[in-house]
Length: 189
Image (cartoon, rainbow, N blue to C red; front, side, top):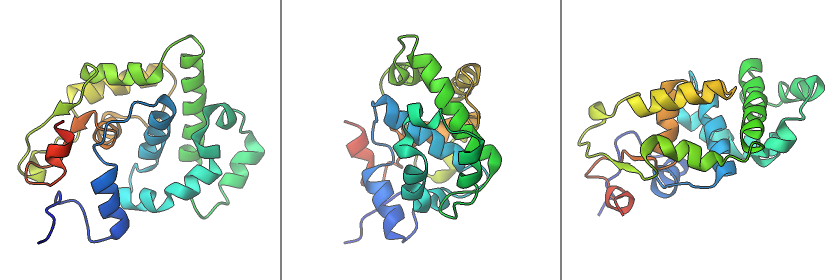
């Protein structure tokens, strides 16, 4: 018997594993949330599978998304990254990860918890949606718009409301698995 997945998942085994084991699973670790937010920003204008296939390259190129290391990247390092065929070689996107690392550090160095901040936009618990078709999934919500504005105030970029909503879906702040998807009930716990 074939497993029923959300309609956006292709037959690519990497994509299926991402859908089955990662997408929509709540993440509460601040640095992991930072990494996922940066990766979602890299998706702008591209398909998620493109970034997913490059995720390991991003982790290697950006010091496992350690904000303390990334914040020290200088122009020489940026030029090196722009020659790396394993990532999206776009200067604005490369610079955004560095800018986001600096915003993250400034926020946590004031004694704030990044995970608590982000989860605050959904009241600290996943929002369980009950969508029956892909057409029902929103591109953005009032929560993702609020998150986007707040992150921009902290100095982040590539965090528009659509990117923020995709991020919220990915890290389980919202359960947008379709109700007939086998992962839907797992996210409802």
